[in-house]
Length: 517
Figure 1: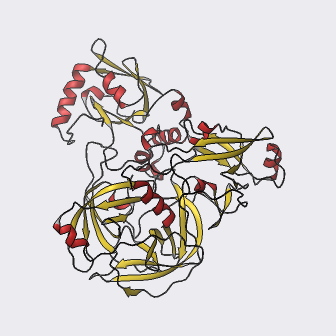
Figure 2: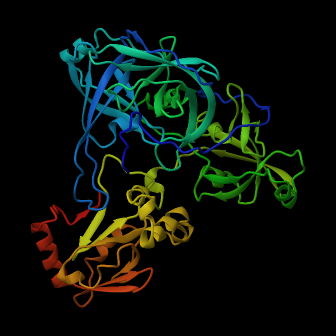
Figure 3: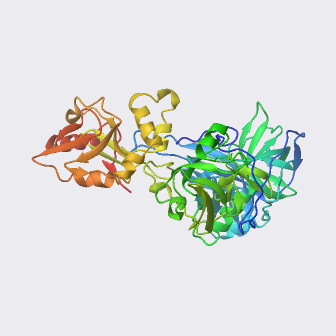
């Protein structure tokens, strides 16, 4: 997945709306969330702050299509927020695929190497620290930790901070106009967002800008639409959740229910479902295998009417005590933690059913199709010129919408609807991604994009299975069974080994025939 280097760091797709019923239960004990506002901008002002440092990072991701290679390195710059314990908060995008990170004092230019101690690419947050030393003590001597303020609401004024050419800090005032949930940076990552209005002057920063109110951190900048003067902000409640979770050195991440729901706004649809005109609730259209919802007993076709005492309306929203109408996803991915108990009320066959369970998080490696890939190279196996990989969303995204035709379109559909392959017990979806010009692969050059079912009679559930299967050729021939035409490929083992050796010595800069870690 490529990271765009625009003035601010990521494009977010809208994932939720607003409006709900009044909660009857006590608000959850964890952290809360911030609020939105209306357009307004003030002239930038020069201010001073001893709670911010420049962060410089060099990034070099692996190629998604030639996975043994790396892309060209690139630099990123941003402003980090100093926290207690000489730690620095930045966005996850700031440090993704980073090979080197350093902190820099804005006014003096003193620099200090740093490393990532906690990162959540779904929540787009990372925590940095440097090794203890005399230089570290000198660097942080004049810096003061900034407190986090999660009390913001709609109509609050906040300030975006940037650094000028000689280290001066420049403040631009915005007003929060809206609070919602949206995707941050990766697939399936809908979180709380503030939307604010106002003009932001462009300086030399590209990733990570702090948003403050009364000298306290209320968020980090996500995106800025200069044409419409609309800014999205990663809010303090999500930051507080991240910091609390990572405090003990064992980060678990944000939980999820693992289900999909459908609004019940249409009168005919409500009548079909047997819902009264004023009845709350949304239709559960899917439950993820092994997810929190399924483990609690939720079923496809249930009508979700409440979570932890908060009534869910026909839009899928609830009435948040701080923000008003908000997507019910925030009750889980914001207000709760992994391991928390959850009470879910559903209507099933006209009767109310109360379900109780424990919130869990499905990790990226638990998905059939990897949702994102940072800080490591794609797994692959190369045999006789045939390149096999495990399907991932970053791989598909690298083609762009314009190139999603033919085999890529077919793979995209599988990624969107993987149920068939999950039911077969596959851990990952192994596919033939590329055919290099070798004698062994002659005639196979147009077969890229094919899903692999078996190799040498061994069922392929992930690349580890594939690597093992290639050790068990029969009668000197590798037999590769595919999901679609031509269904079977044959490789002569001796010729394939000769081609492997030529590839290691050839023009493709291949240093290894596989990566399985």
